[in-house]
Length: 287
Image (cartoon, rainbow, N blue to C red; front, side):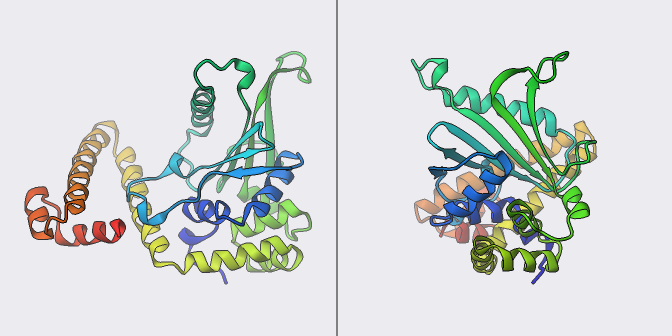
C-alpha cells in the first residue's frame, strides 16, 4: 500500500484534489470538526483543482485549501512538507493578506469572517509536547484574556503525531494516520475504523493512478528543489537564478499563446528557444 513519498496524501497537490472533490465535503467537515472543535452545519469548498489547466510552475499558496463553514467562518488548510524556517512569518503574512481581501468595498469590519488557519506540517516547529496546537492572541500578563478574536492558527506536527500515536483511536488520529501515510498498519486501522477514511483511500488510489497528477507532481518537485538550491547557494546566485527562471517563464507564456493560435511546434521552437521536449510537455499540459 505505501508508495513513494511525493505522492502521499500529505502532498499538497494530492491533498487538495482529494478533499476539494465534489462529494467529499463530509470528509473535510469531519477533519475540521475534530481540529477546530466546532459543529459543521454547512460547508462550501473552493472549486476543485483542474490539473489539466494548472501551470507547471504553480505551487505553495495557490494549492492551499479554502473552505467556508456555516457561512461565517473561513478556514484555510495548508500542507507543508519542507521546513523553510519561515513558518511564523509566512502565517502572519498570509493572515493579513486573507483578512484584507475578505472585506469588499463599502463593507464594515463587522462583515469580516472569522478566519482559522490549519497548517499540517511534515516537520516540527514548536517546543510543546502536543502534536496539535491552537493559538490565540492574549494579554501578556493575563494569559486567559483573549485580546483579538476571530483569527486562530492551528499547527499539526506530523513527526510528533507519528511518535506519540501508535493506534488511531479518535477520528482526528485516524485522519492524520491516513494523511501522513507513513505506517501501513496505522493506515489499515484507520480505514477499518472510519468509513470516511475508507472512502478517502479509494479516491486516493484512483487519484494517484492518474498520469496527469504524477506528471504535475514531478514538475512541482523539480521547481521546489530548484528554488531551494538557489536559496542555499546564496542571495546573489539566487537572484541570478530568479532572473533565469523569469526569462524561462516568459518564453513558456509566449509558447502557450502561440499554441492557442495553432502555430506549428517547429516555429514556436525557433522563436522561443524552448526545446522540442519542453514544448511537447507544454502541449500535454494544455490539452
